[in-house]
Amino acid sequence: MKFRRSRLAQRLALAVCVLTLAGGGYWLWQTGQELLSYPTRPGAGSAAAVTIDIPRGSSFPDVLKILVDEGVIATSDSLYFKLFVLHRGAAGKITAGEHHVRGDMTPEELLVELQRSQPALEVRVTIPEGKNTLEIAGILADAGLGERDALFAATRSPTLLKGLPEGLKSVEGYLFPDTYKFSTRASAEQIFAKMIERHHQVYSDLRRRHRESAENLSRMFDWGDYQILTMASLVEKETGAAHERPLIAGVFFNRLRFASFKPKLLQTDPTIIYGCTVPVEVSAACKQFEGRIRRIHLRDPDNPYNTYTHEGLPPGPITNPGRAALEAVFAPKQSRFLYFVSRNDGTHQFSRSRAEHEAAVDKYIRGGAVGDGSAAGSQQ
Image (cartoon, rainbow, N blue to C red; front, side, top):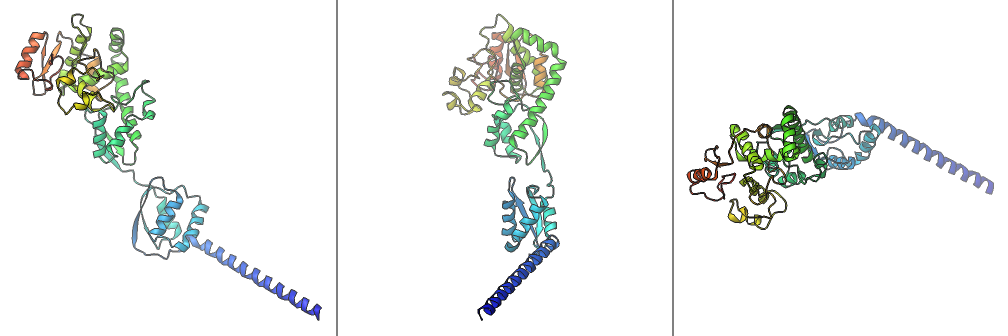
């Protein structure tokens, strides 16, 4: 009897094993069939179109969560979709941006849409001549290319400064004024790199055509490209009249090279304004600057850009000069002028002597009012 019971138990165990294996095999077969048919099986969701936005830098789990949250993929199908995408090796090929999807799309259709190349949306931006880095950041921000403060901070990026003269703290002077097309997805550094590249193109062409002049500036003042750029920025800020730029450049050169003109002060108001408004750290006097130059600013020795208290060029450009201002430095107009003052119509009155200049100041600035846009010695 014991032997028969043992045989019966063994048979029952064997039957259970056979049934279990058969059930498992059937489940595996059924699951395999489902997996094989999954890519072409329509989803169980709505046929209504849904627009989803995949943020830049999203991981595949982030994308899958968005699809589930929006009802494009059922929670019960999320594992299947994950295995399907991983099997295709497409987890890293999903593009950021807007995608138009439906809940009844097949996994293959959905994956094709998620990998669709996004249109490179571009904006056209014009950077006028004579704008500094802070102003350019504002122009780019208004065009929808980022936040002004973040854009301005990028002008001090070590990555951008690597290709420029050693020791610079900003790309001021190298953002060439022109009309550009920028991708709305471009980073601040990519935007500024494009402008810097354009500057190098224009400057290299001008320097090649004015090689002798560049050599003369090197011999006379020990200037390199950065000093030429700095001088061009002064010329750019002093006049919007193209025909005056070579003459204004000549005035500045006369002040630097005439032995009779001492001290070698360029005395140009825009340098004071720049030093009080753009650098991250400013002098105590500049902290009191409210948009109008006062005597405290004219006499401020702590503003390194103040050309009323520091001889020669300021420490760097005060704006981003265009081609005409750069060329004016390479090809200044010869004259004996040492002074100029605004006529208040966009042009200037030039003078050879202090007496002539004072008379011009009385005529055009109404008694020589301080800080009223006049330049090159009108404040003394």
